[in-house]
Length: 556
Image (tube, rainbow, N blue to C red; front, side, top):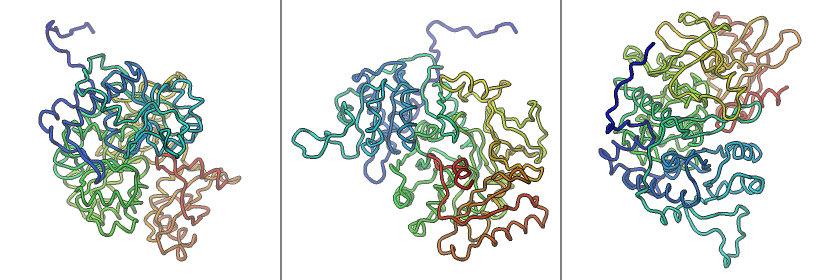
């Protein structure tokens, strides 16, 4: 169609969608809002902006300029939040390094991203000590510490760290001015990068522009503020992340909390007694985490002494078992599912309940809260067959989930082949299979690679896990498909018993539990596991997801 572009007055400001603009209104309306680090320290949003300016100036003094990449290795701290803003606002690229990777994987991601400067918490120096001499792109290392001091001066008998530190974070900020002039530039400029934690092959780099992060922030805020009374987040809430800040921008929530001027509490290292204490003393009202973190908190002895009834939690990163959801609801937690992936920045859907659903009993709400959810605004989400044809929204027609949204990674960094596979047909392929109900709720039934093909049927491992999780003696469960000469594959279940129930939780009780569902016609008889193992723990990936690739190799 012919262009009909608006006319621009020469003096008009174009207002590019840059991360720096997320701070504008909050600094005007909530300059004295608090950002706390555990129960240790806090400062205001006004001070935060000054520190962001100082950090940019300090990085510039180390040679960081537009287009350079700065890696960060830290716990969830206000320092990390400062890098979320300062690094991209100066035109550089923030690389949130996954501190749970092996040293060799870490080396690969740093080299692939071409990090120039790395900010590293002293707790993670051992990770770098074995690889720093092989890092060709890194020029400077800066120490992050809650107790800053020069690392092993000459008169100090303690050994020097092997990593050659160029300075310490607080000293770097103290030496810089707070009034760094953050420039305007193209909103499509790359702002962040990080690496997927897939269980096959090398980590893949995804990347996001300023425009994408701003749009994700605005839309995420709109979606979370939309409900009438529940499953929502607002500026009078108290936010604490429980998804690592190295993982998909902590689901983008720190940007949302900062933009709205909400009070924020950062927990540092994830220790269950510390987290529970912060919920109690800081009045935390909104968080997000993977199911394993929620499980860890609910089963910790200190949990019994903490009132969790004012806490809203988005659960994502893995399927939300109904048994765990019921346990959370029993404690008064407003839990619901969110869905996305590293490639999608990440939020695509939220399982927010309608007023009619909220009128039902908590037990009846479980199935709604554990659904994958409805697409948030601007998300074009489809379920398609192998020919990219739309499947009906009938709650049963299953296909692959493909999406479009303004904030999806436009490819894998320096990997054109996998980028084209990701975006084949003009939609981003999630690798998840599921269906859409008549009322627009998506339900993921499995990962394509985790579907169990047995007896001529495709069985959802997530559905089996969900049913086993409802057994009264089960604390955690994972179901995998194992090769079978006769049936192609058979389901194998791994269960972790609840405390004090290991002796009573026999494999046969799990099988009997599942046969009830099969006899009722709720599942196929092929969905009853062939074997059940009672185990002490289930292997997880670096971001707390069940590592089914590793489990398949362990139980082969």
